[in-house]
Image (tube, rainbow, N blue to C red; front, side):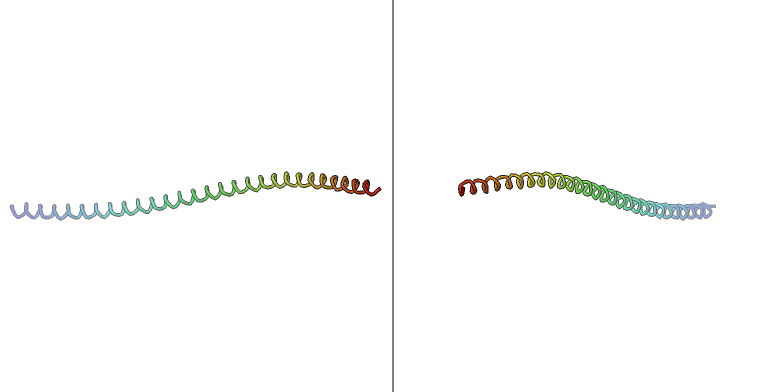
Length: 102
């Protein structure tokens, strides 16, 4: 009878060891899956941040281009006014020279 109890205890210990090993294996697999999921989430977040930064940069470049167009138009207007003014001054100078010659 004592042998049967000892045998039952040994079988129980063996089963307990197997359960523990199985639980450790499952825990290791869960941890590995969690790491993979975390890495996938990290990569996804990095991609989203990169896309958002790229979109922001493109938006800023568009604004800069628009400001440059507006600025160029203003400069062009100023240049046209300066050319007209220079033309008028040139006419005045020519008239002044003609007046001196007459």
